[in-house]
Image (cartoon, rainbow, N blue to C red; front, side, top):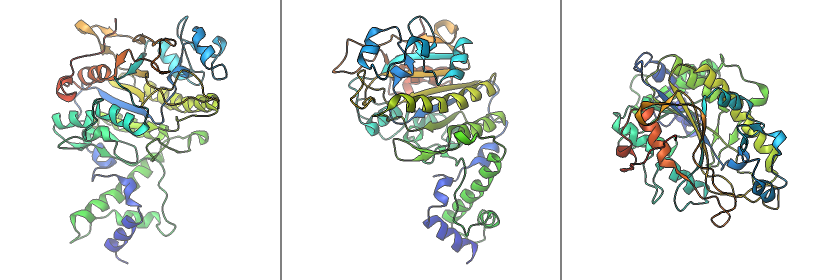
Amino acid sequence: MDTITRRRFLIGSGVAVAAGATAYGIKDLLATAGERPADAKTLVLVTLYGGNDGLNTVIPYADDAYTQARPGLAYQPAQVLELDDHFGLNPGMAGLHKLYGEKRLAIVRGVGYPKPDHSHFRSMDIWQTAQPDRPGTTGWLGRWLDAAGGDPRLAVSFEPVLPPLLAGAKSAGATVPGGDVKLPAAVTPALLKQLGLPAAGESPALARAATCFADLVRVQDLMADVDIDDDEADTGATATGGAAPPLDQQLALVAKCVEAGAATRVYSVSLGGFDLHADEKSAQEMLLAKLDKPLSAFVERMAGQGVVVAVYSEFGRRVKANASDGTDHGTASNILLAEAPLRGPGGSVIPGGLYGEAPSLTDLDDGDLKFTVDFRDVYALLLHDVLGSDPGQVLDGWKGRLTFS
């Protein structure tokens, strides 16, 4: 079987799909080393698929309504990692708690949008398109990419499928593979390298497949240099059905690209498994630890390199626990912002801290929290302060912006 025929067979078997929906791969990113302007910042967007319980992430431990609404799920004051006299972080978030104490983590509470939707898919569409009235076909960072010139290497996902948020009207970001690649037994490393070589007379589609196979090899080589703890090395299906590599592997690839000076300005990574309708407390704490350890290490590694990390989920959970010691789909929640200084009105540097009004746990909308900060205000801040873009152009004329007063 010749190289081209083997490629056709393996493409049909789905082997090349993991290498990305575009012809761009890790070699293309590293080839842009040195092209990022020295003063340019980088946005790393972390999506928590499944609807993370915000009330057991940033915990209102001093509010009696919290313990009354979820007696089996509530953390006691002695268990939380205190932020102030009223709020604390989940015990699984020791690394981020340290960053908070160093004024390097900002927590925006009560983030949501009008007329919220409890569906995972529609809610994620709303968050990724930034169009709550009627989610469109372009993502908010895809529209930024359109305005920035459309080079896919400027906006990159290390998830298995390109998320809608990186799809623009005229362009789209790139998906780059990450983690271990599971190959059929007959596909040896030597054969894989051969499949990545160009062949005379092949069609553009097969040439693109060759690039994908070559990228599989390069990513495997990169990941060989990354230390992964055994207890971190499992994958999990996201709420949208895919299975992303472990978060530490995704962030390791981001770090390599940033340190190389790659031109990429936006990276999308993810962690799934947060749809916890039963036995939530210990499961969420374990998931938050899987977020905390690699993310806090990444922030430390990226210190001084102009990287801003934003962590969000498609919705929070309802205030009251259900009968299975879990929580059902809710509304408003928190966004975490880490590291490079953002700037407030007049150019003042915004330190870490608690921002946004915490929603009332008793004044509810049919059992749901009422949002106090529109998520587009946070996006506008990131577009303006991190990406140097006009928020109104990207967010359909939206004029709000998060303030830190």
